[in-house]
Length: 328
Image 1 (spheres, rainbow, N blue to C red):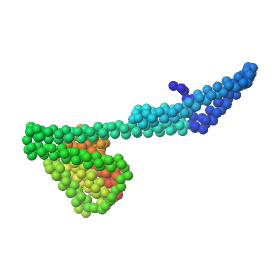
Image 2: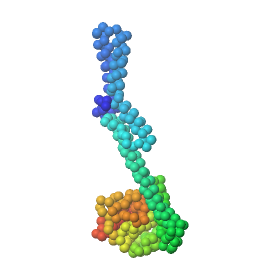
Image 3: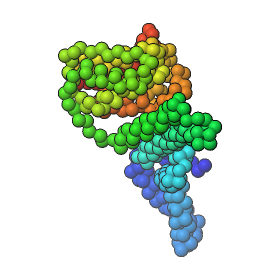
Image 4: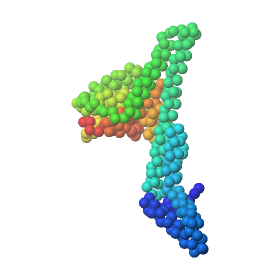
């Protein structure tokens, strides 16, 4: 590794000045020594130029090598390799650029990792119901299994799971597009929650749902996006919680606070942040027919309103709280 003696300097202008000064001094020194030694000028001058070029090359290497490295790393990233980085030992503007470049490379590597993980998870989530549906229909077609109502109902559940997954993937595609505008309207909260609860009862008839809100509570928000929040939180609680799920809404100064609580096993503190990631499944998440996307979509819809969503502390079960600012 070639040393970079000018790296401690903080200014590229100062480095260029020292480079010119060192080159000039080297040339003058060689000419002086050569002439004093009796060497003719026509021989001394080429030697002085060569020495000057050597000094320039040695000092300039540390100034230009980060730029060459950035070019090579950028070409590698264009081919899908995100493991290379630039040596950023310089303290000048080029060093700052190299460090910013490495930070960008880290971000791109993380994006690529998530993309690969997302594709793998989507492939798995699609393959599971498709394989089950294929096996069920193949058994019916071959006469192995009669076309009984329960068999057809199981096949229908797989198609419904596929439908949910496709719908949620479309929602996530809107998330990745960014720049989505909200269509805020003013509406009553209690009928809104009762409608979401009624839909949840159809999907989960064995779970007891309860909606609690002041009959006179009005909010101003995007109704469709807010419905995504409530619907996904109810679905998550019904799948992973116990037999009772309660959704409540209350005002907090100018904000709307939505909470969905269940009496299930709850979420361990160390997993509370990860549950909002795509395809995240914690300790209480098993083969329940869920897609692992519901809470990620809920967080997206909340953040569109500049709000926040979190797993709140609860003495029993799980409680997820969403705060929508400037909604009252």
